Image (cartoon, rainbow, N blue to C red; front, side):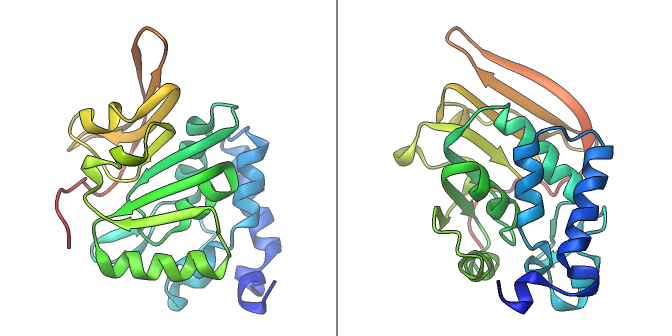
Length: 218
């Protein structure tokens, strides 16, 4: 691993280990997710000026009015998406800086990620190349539509808040699959949808805060 990826001081592997210990204390139990969080160098996904804060329990700006979610939220959504299963094909709506994408790459066989803001997508591509995430494909597209041509997906994760359950994405969720996303406007909550043989089962969970899901390309 290069010096940049391994980090030093507040970006070192030791700091990542402390972050994982904190995640355990916050209730994250899935060891596969915790291993993924420990292995991804979060500091390369933020601007250099913010790198020493990368492993703090907070979200950070990544430009264009977007943020990188705090580690606990990334771990929690990843844990819900996995549900203790092996993941085959996963769809991510909102690549952002590519950090959640990189974690998913450690958890699934294939990851397809969609981002509407072209400059952000270019940055994310560079980050994902740097960590050699070979099982990830990213696309500049309207995330609210998903990627129907590549579905169905074992898991769908959305990193922007929807005002309602997106029907286009629901139709791309495989039987036995899970979709995790924030829902709401003023007050947002995590939402888990499980596609069983007979129904889509919806569970509303803890409060979160995300940027809103917007249609169209930038």
